[in-house]
Length: 304
Ligand SMILES: Nc1ncnc2c1ncn2[C@@H]1O[C@H](COP(=O)(O)OP(=O)(O)O)[C@@H](O)[C@H]1O
Ligand SMILES: [Mg+2]
Image (tube, rainbow, N blue to C red):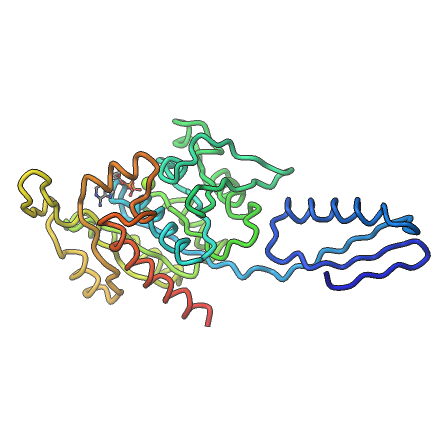
């Protein structure tokens, strides 16, 4: 409550609604109006909601190609940061393969809207989420081009994110319309690029980094996913896609190397059932937590 006043039967109340989402703020306003109008001598109630604008940062997770673990990394970075107390939202901007509702276990929930404004769904991991998959019918994405893509992306980005401090955006693979809109319109604070270790994936990752460089989006760093397979039968470690390629590529490109995530059956199984490995103390949690910590440091420095 910042101030209250009652003159000639008109009660004026100024309240601080910082951090409340639009719907929560509207509800607070209704409740105040309701309660104060019942006070003797009050004929009219005027409620003014003040809010400090949340300084929200945007991080994009990109890759040159699909299937390298962009979505898996996005989910687990978000969950790891939420465990550290950061208020995180995930925007699933992958029009070709939206997967965040599945990964965050919110697939059964319908997205709500107030007027034109979408209300993000809440996962059980303290991460809010909105997905392109909630705006388009499965299988229709291919017909989407430029302006439609831009509009849909804006709807997700301008949703009622409330006190969310950080939005992590799961980009589609490559360098298409979503990327361009994202970079031009929303100016992310940084980009995390995911690659598998083999040369072909690295060539694509390099292309993604070029795009971010051109758009002057700082690269947080490169992540090597699916490095080293630990055989559950014999315990031997093999490297189906090679190993270390991403780290040397990051040196060659002059961008930080953020870490390596092994190819592990548990990661795939847990992810598919909406139980992100970073959410509990699984053996693979620390891999994601380590990368999340570096992202946290980057964001702290970016804020100045
Ligand atoms: N480190 C990993 N170990 C095992 N499976 C993984 C790993 N990373 C991703 N996967 C699996 O690989 C598939 C593709 O990953 P996904 O995150 O959807 O990639 P992208 O978003 O880049 O297309 C998913 O089935 C996912 O569970
Ligand atoms: Mg994906």
